Image (cartoon, rainbow, N blue to C red):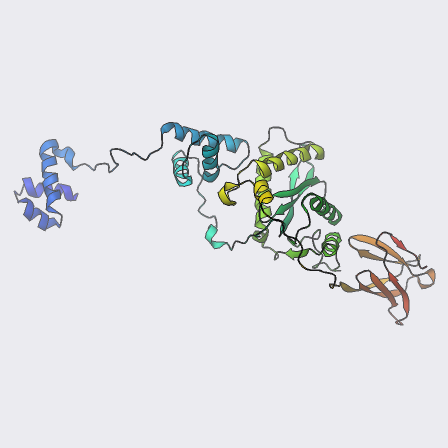
Length: 386
């Protein structure tokens, strides 16, 4: 039995006074009088629970604005674009002259059943965020996979500015190799200047420091030549490269939403160029001040440059190999295989290669005899004896 029914019973059946009932049930005397008057006016209906909703909501947004919020949600989602409360708030302010807080938008989207709860999602407060303070202070890079209409798998390589989130270069390739990564980096440098540092994962196209035969690959040599500091995230820790990972997620969501899917690499590249133009110049970025676009933020700030020389860094390694039947031993430098002439006299001889950058000494493993001492010409595949 509810407390209201107990109070009414004590008042009208047991004929107790309101003061006695208030003390008996530990309630305020004014509530007892209010309940008594309501029962006398309405009878048993007065005992039913009543809504606590206010009679008016002066701060509530107009129904037309609610419809516009829902419409923007559907429109942006169908285009494969971000349709969160912050983005909708930006569109309302810039395109419809209406200001609504993201919290209010989120509340109405939830009421409309347009928000899927993610209880297992890791909270943002658990992440340690970092951000470069200037454009070109750090570029992040990674590649992801996509399929053409015939099922052929291709790979999309991205170079992204850490400070402004500007996409410096996004290219599609059948397979991303170390040479392709280096060439894409060179294109990005021609477009935006030399960065102070780069941040990638430990993929072999970015670094060979964990390879069975470690040696600088094409990108590592290019970064050293330009005095760019190379940084690599820890293994199995993709959140270190979170900005480029998030960019790829946004990119692929947009690609899948396009009505005409690419059948060739050229068609895919056209879509990528279209997305980069929209992403850099038209799409508000929620992580940037005032929801600025990446291009406007990039153009507004001074650019960082490499701050220290890497000339003093040398790369030494020791390789055990055997001279082939034609008197040649091979060595890979900067992702390119070079053939070093030793002479047919030493065919099938086991040798030790002592490598310091481009300087190579070839020593017979059994006798210690110096067979070659040369400086590799990186422009030639074959390194003749004379």
